Image 1 (tube, rainbow, N blue to C red):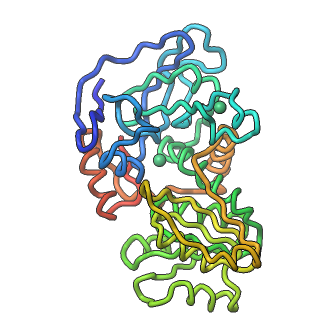
Image 2 (cartoon, protein in one colour):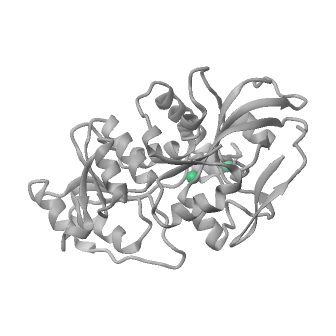
Image 3 (cartoon, helix red, strand yellow):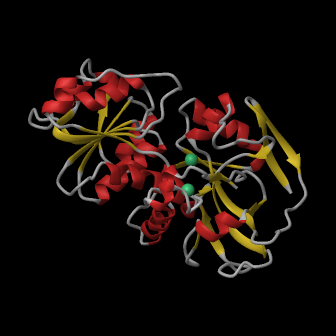
Amino acid sequence: MRAMVFHGPGDLRFEELPWPEPRAGEVVLRIDAALTCGTDVKTLRRGHPVMIPVVPTVFGHELAGTVTAVGAGVRDVREGDRLAVANSAPCGACPSCLAGRANLCEDLLFVNGAYGEAIALPPRLVARNVVPLAPATPAPRAAFAEPLACALLGIERGRVEAGQTVVVFGHGPLGCLLAMVAAARKARVVVVGKAGWRLDRVRGLGIAECLDARATEDVVGDIRRSTGGRGASVTIDATGRPEVWEQAVAAVERGGTVVFFGGCAPGTSVSLDTRRVHYEELALVGAFHHTPELIRRAVELLESETIVPDGLITHRMGLTEVPAALGLMAGGDALKVLIQ
Ligand SMILES: [Zn+2]
Ligand SMILES: [Zn+2]
């Protein structure tokens, strides 16, 4: 099979590999759709010791496909089944898993390999984190299950409720998905981004109200003014930039919740107004990754068309064009590229 293989930072190679054979407990999937992700861009730039502990490995982690072979002992999956597939599987046995926080699993098994013609899914993933698709669900939409599940976790951590004002900082694909999930919960949603075609797209898709961070000296002041001086009920950083984390704290109302969804560069820190955090009871929470339960819920929301993310796909490209696709992502010239 042909695949785009990650050999280390800056080193992607298009290679011919043997077609995978399923070992016991494994399932081989023909990949029908893969999506690019901002994490791919970061990983290509500096590697990712957690998501890609061993190189070389086929790159990419958002995918949907059709089962072409099952290994011995696989019961719940059959040849011909179409699956949404998570990019990790928790162990189910560590203290975090037992506490119902599988996203924090201490032995999370990451799976890469979306940018190839096929993938062998390891037994733990087959057992815990694949979801059969309805016949009518398009594969490109199903490939959103993983990023959507991350967004669901963020909105859950923010305890978003109907009628609240939710401000999402960042207008990348995850900012958009967070906004869509918050809107589906009947919140008023504002996306803070920088003027340009991506923000126009957010507006054009009717995802949320948009605030152009470039057109104002005082984003936080604008958010406060648009909420009767109070600030937002929930603010979410989806940029992974420390200065924006601080804006997210500054823009939240008394008793509000700040969700730190975007991961910042290692070694960075932020400063906090301790008076506000204490006397105004701010809830400051991190949100990382997803759980098998949220992957299932994401597929339900996609199949019921409660969330329709198709408009976030801005380009369609072939397997050999993955480096170009990631270049578009890096330059802010694409939201999601569908790799077919
Ligand atoms: Zn991703
Ligand atoms: Zn675990």
